[in-house]
Amino acid sequence: MYPPEFLYTKDHEWIRMDESIGTIGITDFAQKELGDIVFVELPKPGDHVTASESFGTVESVKAVSEIYAPVSGEVTGVNGKLQNDPELLNADPHGEAWLIRVEVSDRREIEKLMTADEYEAYLKKEKAH
Image 1: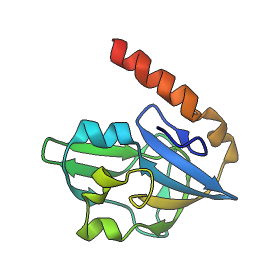
Image 2: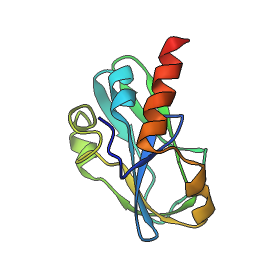
Image 3: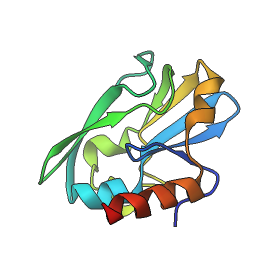
Image 4: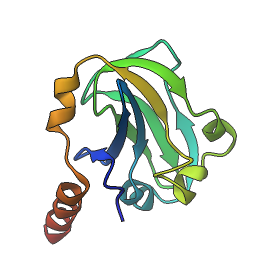
């Protein structure tokens, strides 16, 4: 269910690395928990994000949730489709609805992230509590 080429955080974000650029989004689990997404607030290209710190918000009919950066770096791209079509996050969270692209400044941060198998095990453990 979770793409094996992605890495995951405990806050339910994913990152797909391509050389030094990481594409970041929220997981299918996150979008299901949020419900119908109505608005997304993201940084601008050139902004800096810091691992484990908030870089934007996702607003659903239920709540507003922070989005946390899995890695630190400079924002090189933002998914403009989400401004007019935020519900794309509900439809395709692991594909068309990526959030931002980041030039990763510290590759060691990537080593702290979970594989798809580890993330799925983490979700099972969380549901058990």
